[in-house]
Image (cartoon, rainbow, N blue to C red; front, side, top):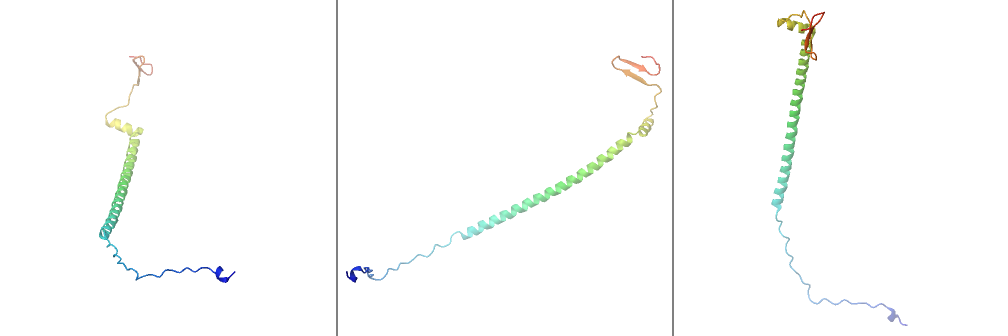
Length: 130
């Protein structure tokens, strides 16, 4: 066997005929809509800012309303307590006696009882029924 028979074959590339072709590449498309994008982003930002402002204002208004309601509730609780003390004071025995005397009432000398079942008025201490 010979050495030339076992050697790998070399492939040859064909020679380029003529000059390579040069083509004009078009310029990138001009940027369209940049102004619209900026305006849209600005509107979204301003809308979000306005929403935050409105929500904050509503929350503050609600807080003031709660404060006014709490003050009113405290005032009404104080008034209720004052009225309750006045009723309690006017309900004492001495206050009731004084009010009755101012209206011209006198203590009862005879005590009578009304019997609803029998339909009669009875007197105490041995008095007869009417």
